[in-house]
Image (cartoon, rainbow, N blue to C red; front, top):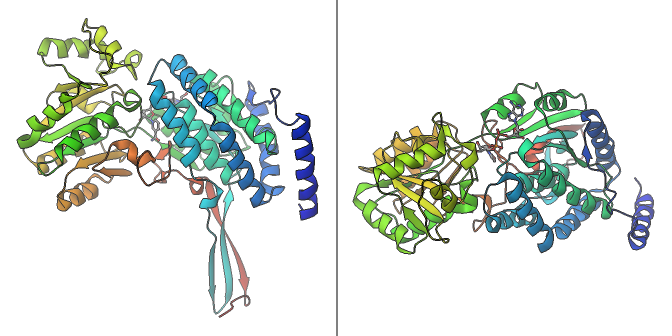
Length: 465
Ligand code: NAD
């Protein structure tokens, strides 16, 4: 597109905006047919890749962020996701949405690699894959869509979302807002669409569709396996079971607070959240005292109560889905225990082989295990993480412990002396990612994760030194 054409297009868009005919409620973004969804996205993606200047894409994405950062939209989607899935905490969901809109990296993240030498110049640029099928989890339906959309379209891609069957309405509503904001600022209609019937059959059709050039799978082991078996480039963002280790050198008051905050965030739904606590024996009592002192943590002490809790939260040894992401008050009410409204976490002291330690419960239940020393805590953390290489944490001031654990865990994310959410940009100096590519190794995803590198070589010229 020439500069002249761009100018005309911009003026036309502005006029249409003024007339109120760009965007609006007629945005089409949800499709029953896989074919229709994919073909719509392909048409829009081609225009997005070829007809838009980079400067325009940046402007449109920035404007989309600004439109979505509307308290009413964020609140509506947070409450909707909570009501539809029955999981999480609305206040924390609001934080997640704001984070994903504000701190997901955009087109500015790209750098061109230029290599010059005796033989001329080679340029390496990042290019879109095309249209990406993004399969999203029930535990984080809205923020995943915001996060994936910004990363994927920043790279010049289009997206067909396949929501979790339990989160279709909130995902659809989110995509409606995204599509409307994009269109309003001039993006091609249909750049980001969703399936209305994400049945297993449709998911297979989508992944195999000739126009889908990449699969992004965020969820449990089954979806990651399906994406990796598709024969297409894939992002596999799988499960985790993040251990947190508190050693004898930690700032215990801060550790107690950080573990409580990280573990209870959105009722522990976040894959990065602290799932089990290993505390070095000589500081375990003091740590527990600090955890309990402000009333936000409730300790379940009696063996019979813990057994009752197991009976309502586990089914055939695995987490009972009906209890995932529920409030501690709701979970304990199922065993006849009433706790104050402000409690965020149920603490139980247990042993390493307890299912609450070994299973990814995704509930605001924190199992605490005493270990003799750092070495024993590290070994237990490695066992509890199950080689997912997802996330792990330490609270310590011993740099040797911090360093040894970071190296040994080999996790995608390792956090020291902070709540787990620092690593997804909340209070930490890093961009936000809600698709943490553990299995396929891209790490916390950015626009770069959804692009391929292309090299262009000019022989003999353009070296200027
Ligand atoms: P889930 O695996 O049940 O569902 C995730 C998505 O995969 C859904 O859209 C579902 O429809 C689809 N799916 C499930 N099985 C499939 C199959 N065989 N073929 C194709 N698609 C399939 O997960 P969930 O309960 O919605 O989410 C929780 C899980 O996701 C936890 O294990 C959590 O750790 C993980 N998670 C990981 C990340 C990450 O970034 N690594 C982020 C969020 C959640």
